[in-house]
Length: 376
Ligand SMILES: *Cc1c(COP(=O)(O)O)cnc(C)c1O
Ligand code: SF4
Image (cartoon, rainbow, N blue to C red; front, side, top):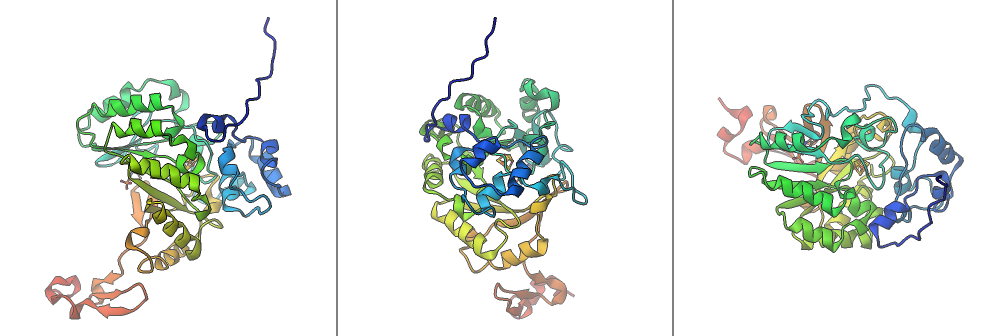
């Protein structure tokens, strides 16, 4: 009865986010249209295919350098053989999301806020994803068999915990959902009086700026206060399209903040980080976190040393606009651990160091009784 017909090949409409997703690159042949692959990259695409999904929007692929395999856009989105290496202490979930999962989708780790894993889909799968097992692994997700389960238990959990005042939609990329589905989730959250703010974590401004439509912004605006955290990792990603997407969000009253992951060979230099952070200020996006890369299975090769991260922080603090400087943290099952602390040692008579490495004693600057190490 049924005959097999190949789906009609629609043409890519660059400005249409659904068309970008329809035409996402998932194969070696698809990649070859955008870049000249090295033999190593070809081998990696084949070797990783059974293990991790590959997806790149044409928009993000258009930012790739055709000939340079060290292009930061290529490195973030194209498979690499190192993904199959297993590093000491690596884990599918080193940050402990699954320990704190209270329902199918709700992770409650910090006192006053939760995340909801609204999806496991993303327009582009970052090779360095912290939830790589959830988003990109061909074998599973945190959802297991329960992906299609209803949302009642998730909302009921938030409803029955009045201490939750901040709900962060994440995944996966929440903006992969249609406006209708998103609105269903957000409007339901807005029926819970103790939920004061709703945050969205999305890499669409970077991967798929076409997704930030006027309609989406107008819908979100109805449910203020809404905040959006995005994820630029390299100055190359700050394009006119990305800037316009952030501008649309901002004009609808949605503050846009950025969470960068410190990635070896991609942004682990003072120069690149300064260019990224000043670039973000120019598009009115406020740097928030600099995450030390997590020791996730398939991701560990992107880790650099904490010492390197601290060296970068030393190259930022004091040399740049104060709010250009993100907080450098490592996520652990115990929470986010600041890896950058004020340079103050009470046991050393209140000795402090400024950003140029110059030292002074607070003993000569503040009332001695206010310096811990100096108390009787
Ligand atoms: C990072 C994170 C949050 C949000 O933390 P903030 O420091 O408020 O941005 C909430 N829940 C989980 C599980 C997180 O990892
Ligand atoms: S967009 Fe976020 S959730 Fe999706 S793959 Fe990248 S880091 Fe993971």
